[in-house]
Length: 199
Image (cartoon, rainbow, N blue to C red; front, side, top):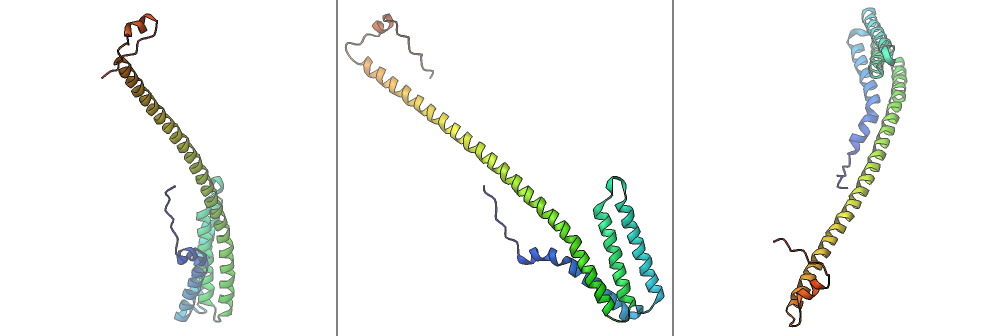
């Protein structure tokens, strides 16, 4: 009921959507810087990147095939690392810019494809959580309204009882002041005694 409304800045909303392009662009830029600093046609550097990419891919395969279906996040991280190393190796080894740009575009498309799956899952989980929270909030609000009505009814009944008791006491006091009133005649007639009020 008293929930704060927080509006997120558009940069905070757009940052996760730009992350795959930023990551692949960073790898491409670093690979081209490496190319300009002597990695072009260097067999040793290319072999190093092949070994690192193959190691990361192997780690991803082991993580995916682990017990109980494997760890999906670890496997995805390892495969993304392998792809990034392969892209950096090609960007560093190739002499032209066309092959690195082609691989960058392919890597960016694959990264967005994988990220879109997680974004959909996250969106479904968020919507399900909001629905469940709304249902619970409505249930609790209904219970609060019922309890409020019950307490108001009890308070009104107590007020009416007090008002009735005051009116009865006033009536008895007024009747006792009448000259022809005989309380013993009421008792002889079989009327019950009024309980004594505890002071």
